[in-house]
Image (tube, rainbow, N blue to C red):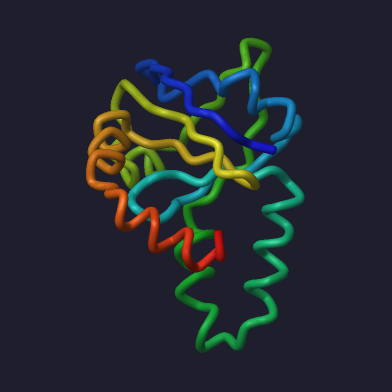
Length: 139
């Protein structure tokens, strides 16, 4: 399970070390793509394949926006010996990644956020919005 929060820095070439805790669950080859809320989604191969198959089941009229969003800028990545990946320029631009990034685990995927945006996102969460979401889970 992909859980936790880790801060790292992107180097001048666009490389960043994937937290060791995530590398085992992500595997040797995984996928990075545009995510919601201007972050990046990092998916293990199995989750990527699941996303592809779910989108394939949709009628083209419903699927085309998702296909364009998730697949057009996606990259298949493999960490180097230091555990670093190269985040393509268009993906760094999508998430406004410059130097300080935060990796977060969300159970089945990892998200990469600009650290300042992640802090802002968290500061805007309220007890009420969390309670409402928990109500939907019947917790």
